[in-house]
Image (cartoon, rainbow, N blue to C red; front, side):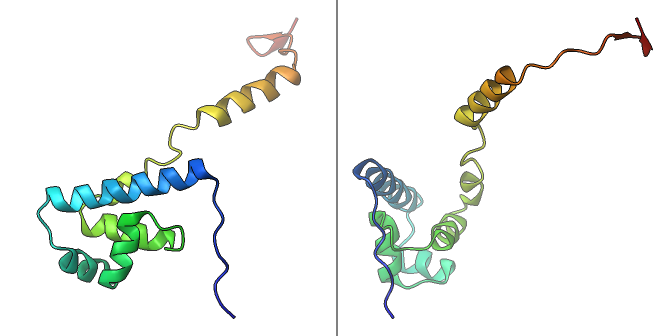
Length: 110
């Protein structure tokens, strides 16, 4: 049984393409040959080429391995670190379930 094709929206495809381009630029800035980065990441040269193209068929673990080989593994930790939408949704939920503050002052009922 073959792999299922990953279907992405054009906007999401562009995000992956940009990420791949950025990974390639990071490798070139470091003046590292593709063969060396692939070896350090434990992948083939062809898989590294797919990473640098932003291929959706490459596993997320492979992207992390390449970033690690480039000394950039910490960059992956920044994803969703500042979840603005999640906080807004949480705040909306808090507002819709208004609760009264307790009627205590200093631990005593008033």
